[in-house]
Image (cartoon, rainbow, N blue to C red):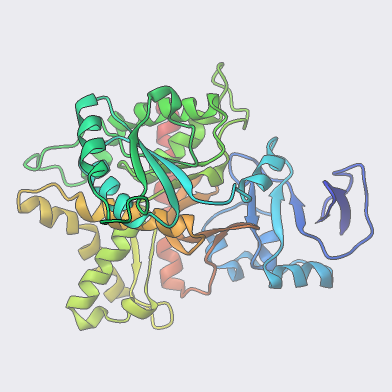
Length: 418
């Protein structure tokens, strides 16, 4: 093992000659590794020694025991992992130093910008106004429909607690060229939503062709603005659009990949929260699923490929598959009633997950796992993004592998089209 000094901080690595300043072995804050920037996190909080092993990034990160034997580490490195203070950073990423500063944002409440204020955006905006006072300073809203912006600006400006007029975030219009003058950018715009009576079963994927060029436009704008905050995708299909954001922002004017755009940790998809909440809804209705409320998990995309586990410690594959089907099709029940199912997604996936994120707490979100965005329980810490890692039964892990393969196939298809 090799040790270096960088920026006054001690770093360890398995790799020699990474930096010109070698150091005496000790207790490091950083661990330097090298992986393809398109396929790997730029920086992460290390919670298991096997996360430092060579090999690609994939769903095995969610159950590190499946990555093979633990590597040989010095006692000081192992102690830093157990203390939760070791950050692994991809030395192959040209912005690896920026990745470290990303996890040390400015203190205080955050400014949030929202595009746009349709059904989802308006509901999300209302929830953030009412619930976000402790972590959000202000919310800027932007939409092609200027009347909609004026309406929401006035409506929410008239919501306040009596005699405590500064406790809720201020809502105000923001011009398109200032969209990325913020800490968090929420993309809730859409160009196409199939009507309730369309008969389309997978509504989310039907929106991909229309929404992908739109989200890519704002991804390139984020790159041009040197955006250093969070880019959150709420529009469907959430997970493929996250990959589109990452890809578009990291290509130069000539279309070639240069890794100078958004870091993978800057992009999250907020679609899993409502799936988790829907599974809990059914678990409260049917005692067969009750273990989900104390020991269950939701993984994967907001839509087809979703994986619901009825329990981690007492996993039942048949029950889990049944609960997954109920959860995945719950939006269709709302459409059968003649309504678009946007209220629960806007609040459970959007507002609630954002507030948890800004508090540094565990939340449901899609993160980069080897070039695809995959929904997991995760949180932002001062030492990097942390994804929950825990032992999984074989049948559950097999389902995660199947979903991973589906998402990778979709990414390959998108790249061919591009």
